[in-house]
Image 1: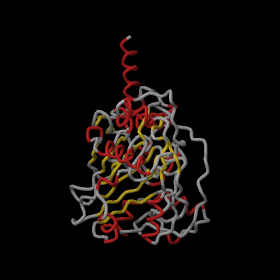
Image 2: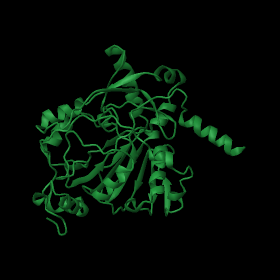
Image 3: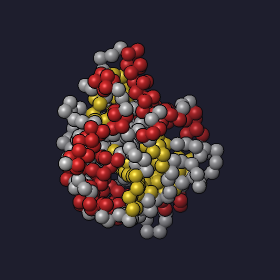
Length: 373
């Protein structure tokens, strides 16, 4: 093992002091470069997730976001609708107010990027808990003894990865993480610490669910509001079957509103995705397919409200799964190198639609008028 890192094989899972020391020193960037593939897929089974009351940290934010804007070296919006870079702030050292303000900033901008971050696993988990209960991934690999972390370890030469991706179009990768859960993810934290080379391995974020809603005609908006769609865990059930890895927790199907309201901004967002959304409740299959395929195309072709991010090592992306979709780009296969990182994914509230909520454009227009007065 790398120096200062406890060998996980020597850990007694029932010894809290050993686990704490292991977690405190766990540097996954160092581990992957020393050991290569290290994640585990234990044959354990977790009970179904139970509903809980989610309290969004964004409600405690300063609307001016002063704790972030006054302390950052630079803040730059990458597109008009989605994506912001914050320079000069370390996520490992956020104050309580900065944590709350970050929730509001991400809720407004969809995804926020922090480069040159020193944060490691323990502090990532501590930070994530500020925003909700951590999820255990059903089938993904995680570090030994740390099941709240999902490892992204993609090597171009692995034949099973190439085979699984060969039967789909790159556009099929658009999704919002585990949207089939009763209470899907809110904020998510992804640190990429190893890249396959100078180019390749970008991630697309989009679309802004807010702007996707705003781009619909009034007739479409009226038609969709109040509808529900089934989000299915079939992808993860099939992944477990195809890979032989255990399905460590039930991957359920749940109905969620097609248009949802963000609890902090109060803005309406389109909430369907090709990865997990399967059918509109109460529609025939043909009717449902026609509507969903239109909405998927609307989301995926909205290149003017998407952002494509070119990673640099040790960058952390923080995004809001409630109002964005994302798609990793596997354009580096056939070359050399490894793309590695880890994700922490707190859950949020059960999706809901408030008929009194406003669209992003409506809310910003009203805000602009108030500022003129």
